[in-house]
Length: 106
Length: 123
Image (cartoon, rainbow over all chains, first blue to last red; front, top):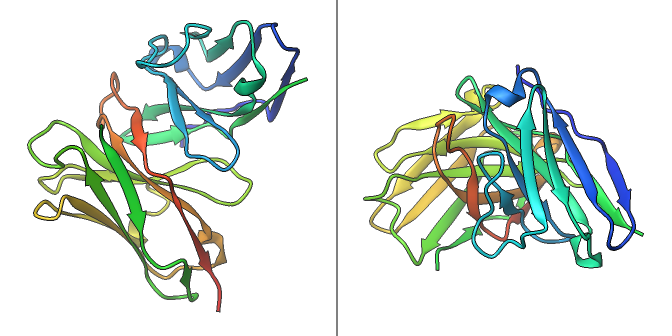
């Protein structure tokens, strides 16, 4: 079965750029999306179709996908961006999620 | 604004069947191109897709759960439901319902999500 791998944790200083990766075999040939999940809340879609932002998502959130890795980038990270981030893709008629990455804003 | 709300028992005994309902408001389940899905998250762990269905009954299930899962829809009530049979402690999780763009490679995301409901499997 297809697997997506994320680092368990990433740390960033306020105002800096955070990059969260999601790796899978030939992931660049598929579309990836990303969800933000703050403590005790439901996931919220922040990136879909690799690079697109839903309405209401700040421009500091961006995405890319190439080769075996999709990346979520948060520019000018703010304290309120501290959350778990989950990547997701579709393979062989199955939805696949990564294990999630906890972003800490120090 | 589309909203989804899960409901059902918070405690289920081992070997019994977990049953949850998702009520959709602010939009219709039928007559659109969207699928409707269930996702769960064990405490402290990542997200796991359970399955998705279209209002006409077309379904896609996670192969690892397929033998125990049934997702159905009641268009008259604008609801869809999840049944998971023969539960064990490993099925303890927060269960979310969400609108699913569909089983397509180019549009496959979930948005929006319900608030989630914790289901504990314990005797």
